[in-house]
Length: 66
Image 1 (tube, rainbow, N blue to C red):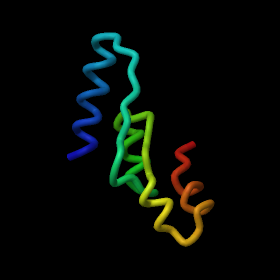
Image 2: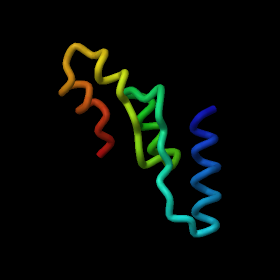
Image 3: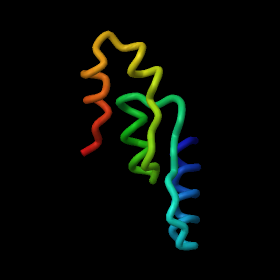
Image 4: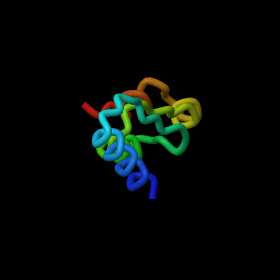
């Protein structure tokens, strides 16, 4: 599962004081974005989700976590 992998990477980086970005590229949409960020990712690539939508602004806004 992707979130388990992200959690393990984030845990390892935090434990070893590595200040790195964890990027998820692929499969990001309005549901998986939240899960990826919750697991520890801080960079998301959501190209297909946005470009295939009928309304780019709505697609981008649906990805906002905060």
